[in-house]
Amino acid sequence: MENGLKIKALKGFKDIVPGEVELWQYLEEKARRVFERFNFAEIRLPLLEETQLFARSIGEATDIVEKEMYTFVDKQVTLRPEATASLIRAYIEHGLYVQKPVQRLFTIGPMFRHERPQKGRLRQFHQMDVEVLGSQSPRVDSELIAMASLLFTELGINVSLELNSLGCPACRPKYRETLVAYVNERKDALCSDCQRRSETNPLRVLDCKVQACKEQIVDAPSILEHLCDDCSEHFNTVQDGLNQLGVKYTLNKFMVRGLDYYCRTTFEFITADLGAQAAVAAGGRYDGLIETLGGPKDSHGIGFAMGMERLVLLLEQQKTVVEPSGVDLFIAGIGEEGARLAYGLAHGLRAQGISIGMDHEGRSLKAQMKLANKDFAKFALIIGDSELESGVGVVKNMRDRDAGPQEVKLTVEAIAATIG
RNA sequence: GUGGGCGUGGCUCAAUUGGUUAGAGCACCUGGUUGUGACCCAGGAGGUCGGGGGUUCAAGUCCCCUCGCUCACCCCA
Image (tube, rainbow, N blue to C red; front, side, top):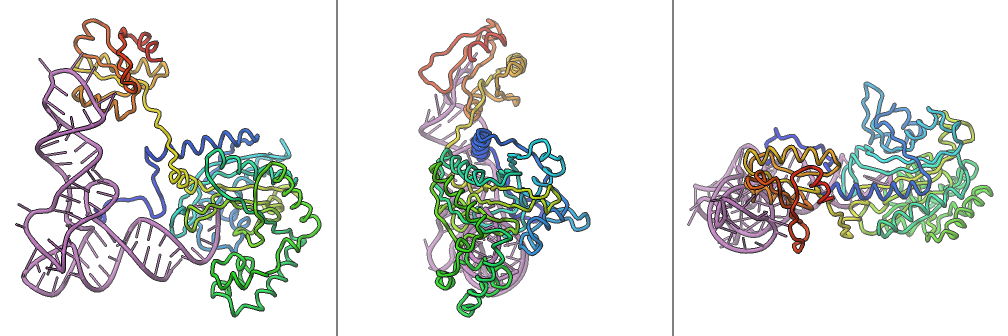
C-alpha cells in the first residue's frame, strides 16, 4: 500500500467524495435558507490574507497566531485560520458601512490551522460564519443566537446552549485582577498546565478539565458579578431576548474565548456526541475589533462560526440520509447505430434540461442496465436494431416495478414529454 | 510539541502456541438470459500482509527502527 512514491492528501486534509458530499450539500442548503430568512447576504472572501490581519485581530500571543498558522514567511501572507478578520477587512475595504450602516453577512468555506488532527478537528476545516457588523443592540445578539438554534432544530441536531459575558475594557481588567489574585492563592494545588495558564491566560484556568483544578475554582469570582452597568444591562437584555424567543440556555460563568477580540456576549452550542470536540458552534461580540482593523470609530460587531465537519459527523451519527438525485433517464444504445442515435438524443435531451446517463464503452445491454441502476436513473430507454427500424422505443420505469413500459417515439420532444 | 491504540485486496475484517500456494463478506468483471438493472447461481480478476532491518530451518504472527492513520492532551469551530 505504501511505497513512498504514492502521493496522498496531507495530514489533516480530507477529500469529500461522492457519497459523502451529499450530506455537506444538504447542510449547506439548509443553512443558506435559514440565513436568508434572517436577511443575511453571502460574502465570498479570499483564503489568503496579509499575515498582519490575523496577528492583529486574533491576538499576537494566542496559540493560533504563535504556532498554528499556515504562513508563507517570505511573502508575509497567511491562509486564514478563521473568517471574521477577513470579513471585517472586506467590510472596511469596500466601505460597506457607508452603504448600509448595519451589515448582515455570512460566508462559508475552508479555514486552516496547523494542529494535530483528531475527531472533528482537521487542518483544513470548514466553517459557516455569520456576522452582524455595525450594531451594538443586544437584540442582535439574541436574534443571532436564536437563528443558530433554529438551524440546529431544523437539522434535527441536539445541542445545548451555554451563555456568558466577558465584560468590556471598562470592567474586564478589574475582574481579571480579582481572578488572578484568587488563582495565585491556590496555585500550588493546580495542574502544571494551569500554573502556566495563570501567567499566560488566567481566564483559561476556569476552563480546565482536570478534576483537581475544577474543585479549586468552583468558588472562583464570576465575571457576571463584576460586569459594569452597561455590560450588565446589555447581558440582561440578551437574556430577555432569548427568553422571549423561547431559546433555552444555561449560564456558564467559566466559558472563555480563545481569541482576544471577544467582549460582552459569548456563547457556545455544545454536543455530548463528539468526544473532545464538544463545541459545534461558538461566537460572541467583538466591539472594538472593527476600529482596531482600521474601520470606523466606535463600531461594533457580533458573530459566530459553525464547524461543518462536526455538524456532518452529527448528521451521520443520527443517520440523516440524503438520497442522491440520480439521472432522469439512462439511454442504452446497442450496436454502433443504436449508440449513435442514443448519443444524439442524449445531447438534445440534456439541452432541454433533462439529466441523462449513458455508456461510451460499448458494454453489453446487461452491463448498461447495471450502470443505469448505479446512476439511480429514474427511467431507462433502450435503442437497438428494432427501435432503429420502427422509430419507436420503450421507456422503462427503474424505480417502480409495477409501472408498465411506455411506448415513445424516438425524438427529443416525445421522450421529454414522456418522462418530464 | 506529548501520550495511547491501530496498520492484511477498493471497503469491513479473519488467519490456532511462528508452520503448506494469506482467506471471507461487500464491491468489481464475465456468464447463466444472441435485448433488460435491483434478487439468485456459477466463474474470474484483485494482496511485495505500511516500509526497512533483525531473530529463526520457517515471520502476517516475535524484536528494533521508521512512516502512516486514529483517539486524547495542549489549543480550539
